[in-house]
Length: 294
Image (cartoon, rainbow, N blue to C red):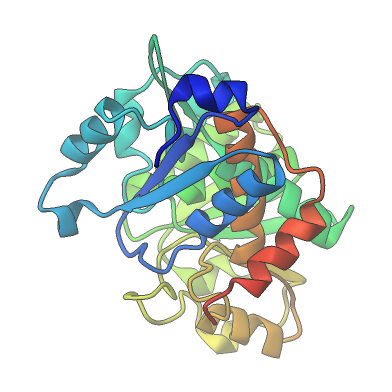
């Protein structure tokens, strides 16, 4: 027997919070677990569903509209829709507008609002893993949605130079120009698609492509090019132990896993959705580990 809304309030129970994720290759996403468990720790009844446009026989816009109209409070957006969704949103934050990519959407009475927690999540994950280690000269492979968020995160972390690599040379040039403009030229930027040339003198290397993700096997970097850098980051976290991560660790680099970005961006998104942050993030980590399918 269900509890009517007024009965829930009189019983001291929170209204259900309906959330979801739109993306491709997300059947093994841990986002449902993270948000449901964060809700449990915060005293909220959270549901979180996966929406895969191609499996639903719909395009992204149709799925987005269905989520908006069904009463869902908010959605996360992942590959390959983070840039596509921007035109559907009100974005109040200047940095998010500059990044041009959104992974968190809240449906409100005045429309849909967009946020980028990939950026804040990456900054938090980097600082937690590396402390005050300066990024130095960094090669960013991939100028799509997550690549933009990470590049702006590296700018905030004090990177000396960014080399943007992408198969789409226009996207690489555009992101490099955006970083140069924001930093007033203080951060050296360049772009291209020659990974071997780009790696010369690099201190950090980040993978912001889908390579390594389920359905996209491989690594963006030949193993023989790794070893002279200090640190590496892989935005992919399904699976966590990607080929690139294995290569970087074997070469002796300090490695930041995509799982850490997933965790921190998820906490930031949960706060935007609900106004709450679980008091014990260590407990949340442990609960996620205990519910891991691996």
